[in-house]
Image 1 (cartoon, one colour):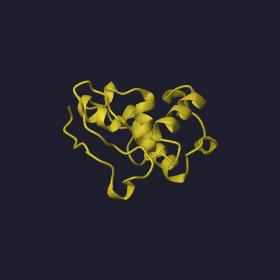
Image 2 (cartoon, helix red, strand yellow):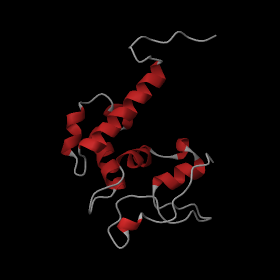
Image 3 (tube, one colour):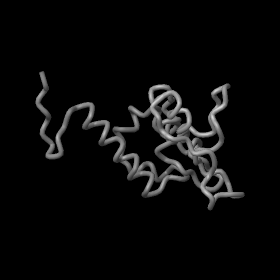
Length: 131
């Protein structure tokens, strides 16, 4: 467990409204989560599928199109997170529910992953390996 707080209910402005992909509900003993964020908080990020990880980044969903569905459509279009990284971000506009904010969020996550994986500094230079 990574110690993140779990929201027990949707934000007040969503009461009675559609499910837009916010963390809600409680973590039961049977470990079924209503949102991938609850699963991440309980088990850690390595326990999540590609769809679950993407659903956290694209949350909240849109009316009638929850974050889980948007994430499934991203994987369906590109095949995997790995293949998604090599495409133009503009292709994401073809997926229902994807707009500027979600695309920018995904672009930032991909860049963080790239810099972490390859050890790049802000100015583009590669970090020297520490011994």
